[in-house]
Length: 71
Image (cartoon, rainbow, N blue to C red):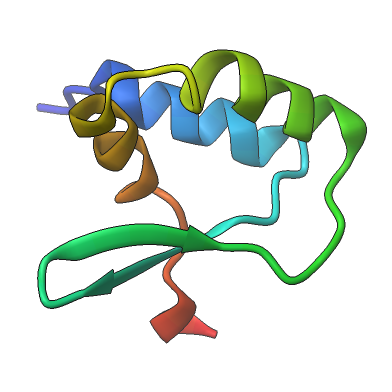
C-alpha cells in the first residue's frame, strides 16, 4: 500500500519544479542546505507553500528532500 502524505507531495512538487534544497538531518535536527541556484518557480513554490508552514509541518516536508549525505 502506498500512502503519500501532504508533506511528501509538497516535497515532490518542489523537486519537480527544479528545487535544489537538500535536507540535513543531524542529531534529530532537521534543516535544509542550498548551494545551487534554483529555478524561480521552485523558489516561489517553497516560499509560498513550504516556508509558511508551521515548523513541525515544514520539517516533515524537509525530511522528504534528498539528503546531503546522499551527495
